Each structure stands twice: as C-alpha cells, then as structure tokens.
Length: 418
Image (cartoon, rainbow, N blue to C red):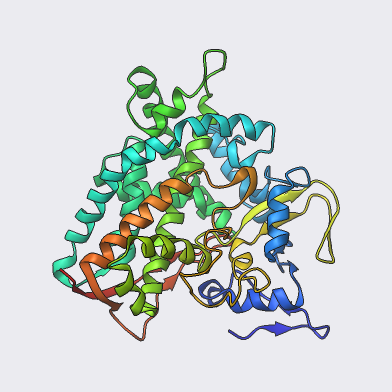
C-alpha cells in the first residue's frame, strides 16, 4: 500500500479505502511515526493510535464520553432511521457501552449478573458440540468457504439460541446483525438506510415477543437473565432498554467473534508450523488466542466524544469531536510490544493487548468469545491439517468498515488429520 504524504511529512490515509481496510498496518506504522493522533479526511474523526494514549482515552470517561452521536456525524440519512423506528418500532436509547458512569455502572451491574463465569461454562459443552457438527458438515469435501461454513454460524448460533431463534434461522440472524451495524460502518444512501432500518424493526418485533415470553416462562438464556436481572428494589428494564442492550449483544457477540475466527485461521494458513504446534497443546492454543487477538484485532476501534478541549500526543482535539480509539493500531505499537509486527505466541506480555478494550467499558462478552475461539482452534487443528487457500493467488476478501476488520470470503482447502 502506497501512503501519500503532505509537504510537512504528515500522512494522508483514507481508512474507507478497501486496500487500507485489507491491510491497515502500514498506515498505523506511518501514524505512529509521524502523526499518532490523526484527523481522518471526510469524516473529521480523530484517530488515536498509540497504546498508552488509547488506554488513557478508555480510562478517562469524564473527558471521552461513550454517549456518541456517531450516526449523526457520518449519516446524512440518519433522520430516516429515527423516523422509521419511532413509527414502526422502538427508538434507540443509550445503554451499557453507549453510556458513562454512573449510568453505565447501573447497566454493567445488571449485565454482570447475566454474563457470569458459570453461565459461560454451562455453554461450553454446547459450543464444543457445535464446533464438531460444523466441521463434520464439510470435512469430507476437503474444502469450505470458511466464513459461511464455520466462522459465522459458530458464534451466530450460540447467540441466536440465546435470543430465541432456531439454529436453522442463522441467516435471518446475520441479516439482522448486518442491518444493525450498517449505519456505523460507512455512509449510507437514503435507500440503504431505509432497508437497514426496516430489517432492524423486523428484529425488534421478534425480540419483543421473546421478552414477553421470557417474563412469563424464564429459561436458562441471556434474554431471561436480562428480563429478570433487576433486584427486588429495582425497576425492570424497559422495552427500549432491552432492545438497545440486545442490539449491542447481537452485533458485539456475533460479528467480532466471526472476524476473530477468520483472522485466526488466516494466520494459521500463513504460519503452517503453528497449526502443527497447536494440534498437540492446549496451552499453546490459549496463547494463540491471545496473540491472534493482538496481531489482527477484530475490532479495530470504537468511538468516543470529547467533553472538553484536550491535547493528546501534541494534537489538540476540540470539545464535541468524535474520537476513534484504535485498538488495532495500539496493539501494533512498537513502544509497547517488541517487534509488534511479528506473530509470537510466546510473548512475555500475552494478554496485555487491547482487543477487548480496557477500563469500565471492557467487553463484557470476552469470556464467551475466548471460549468459542479456544474450542474452535483446538478442534480445527485436531481434525484438519495443511490448511491452505483454495485459490493461492486470491487472498481473503474484506468488507469495508470504519471500526471492524471483517473478512467477507475465505475459500480454504485442507487434508484430514484424523
């Protein structure tokens, strides 16, 4: 990727360019060296790229608010969404990751009752069976399109079952998740915004029925936990709050893990010796999970909004500016990770990456995501060997996104290892 520079030496980078999306790391390196806080052309967003700066932004919830009007900043068609939601569904309210303390503390307390270690452990056998079933569905063919045949259905089915969908409806679930994410990915036309909102409203009405069912007949699932998460002296969550929480859990629990799985296998293809090592060591699988999350973070960045003028690494960011805290860049910061551009599962500082964020807003689904990744890599390396691209001259295709790093298609071949 060729990076253009202004006469003063500062880089000019379009983070919506598909070539940059497919490989943003040379851009991060240039920013680390020349302009660690970068104002993106077109959007005006400020991108923070250094590890310590990113950690500071994530910790300082007074200066960097999570209550961000990103849609209004990027979508001229945003009014269509609000109008349709008001008319046909439930308008968005800010909850959990889109709030600041002390409001965030209230929602986090409720969600901590739902995303408990025992609840995730109870899901572990189901996750392992699902991994086995998915591999069995394509192992005899010697090839698959990894995104749709494995990386999408694994986390998708796990979450879908928790919100009352039958596993056979996974493509409906994907359609809903894609629609919920659409407005934050890139600028949309009025028609694209209308279609995405209509699809989200479809999901909202399904969820509303599930909420009511779980109030009457609780089950051992996430929605039941949310509906009944309040204590005796607390008000139950409103329908608007429940809709917004599920919006976050659906998009956060599905797309990010799908992306992590794709990048993990793409790394194993480029580093075949690692697959052989993982086949015989659970400990190395755990290390690979952490290093792969650092090396190619599935969430490249999230949004904040400044509540005052603030100076970061010599750049003044005005009040009310949208800031992208760039996890993917921070995790490749040479001042924090030695030889950051090299994959090394034996690093002494494994687990200090920011792939799940940091501070009070650290990803609440991290335990579940790690369980899914561990199960997947254990069984994939046990059952498959010599994993390779089906068409060696065609690398994985990437979707365009301001803050994610999604692989759209990845056709692979392999030999049976068992």
